[in-house]
Picture 1 (cartoon, rainbow, N blue to C red):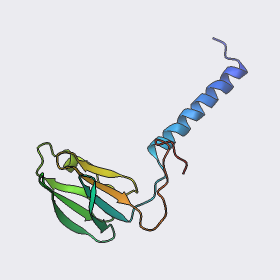
Picture 2: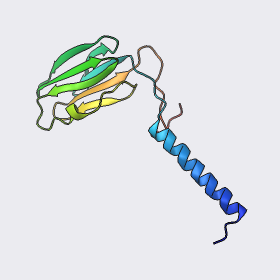
Picture 3: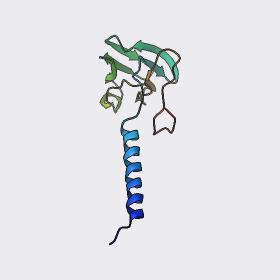
Picture 4: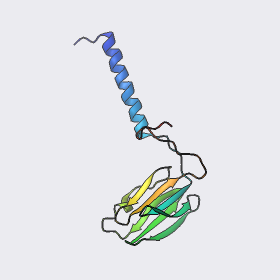
Length: 128
């Protein structure tokens, strides 16, 4: 099989585009958040700074969840829901990241204080 110069250029462009797409997907440019906002059934119920380590138990109509803020990250330390998927989710710290407990209708979302908008990443199609 003979590759011509145009074939090599075309394959190089495809490879470069694929590499760029992989970098944009795996390394999104989001900023580190400053606080976690807690919503239960769509209503904001609390907000905690990520700069202070703390452990909080959240009581909802469906049950209890315990969150852990430590070293600028948030995790779901405990939950009494049946599946406890939220407890196995990784720690979050970047603006826009969430941890969700569906049975309790609880959402933890990292936000930035002030008026600056969090940049969107390549997956959402927004411009940084």
